[in-house]
Image (tube, rainbow over all chains, first blue to last red):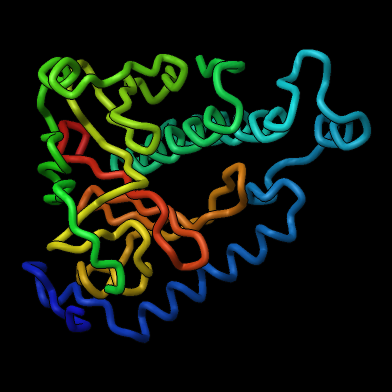
Length: 119
Length: 142
């Protein structure tokens, strides 16, 4: 077990204090809790006719189907949002978003491999 | 850290993870490591070609060069596998606070995404346990 605060070559002014860490974790947890109350679970930015229709009828004829169908549809929607966020943002932020998109795609493909293409 | 599994999949921030050196041509690895190309995970906007070493490890390339690696198996830092470790332990260990913590939904629920920009590290965390690490190197974009 390595000791708390052992910096491993990092500048000493970058050490996270326990208080800072707790604050960050607390903020993240609040954010997660808020998100869990949202049916879509993707930040409360969705809604409208598409969602209402989906709730009423389930996935449409041309939508992915089966166990992973809904998950893939939701992932596709989120990927589109992230693609939009990439436009005009900083390079660092863009790289973060690229990683997120790839992780979401990998997860969705794992859920239902091969049925949906992402380009 | 509690998780003390050791492996050869060492992560050297911004330089290398396991055998993969950021910036190296992927061609050098495809045959040697029998990597599979995964075209179905390509996204036009991201523009990263995707290769797989196994089901839990992805190698992302841009213009034929390795830009990032995603792993849900091993990401060994200073002898400790951070996959499966507590996020709080890893934050203390690396000594840098995350630049952002954001929720993101996957098929099996919401995970917290921790980004450490200066290390090129993104961690996906569920119930305080690190499930996936996506490591990248320096690039022209940075």
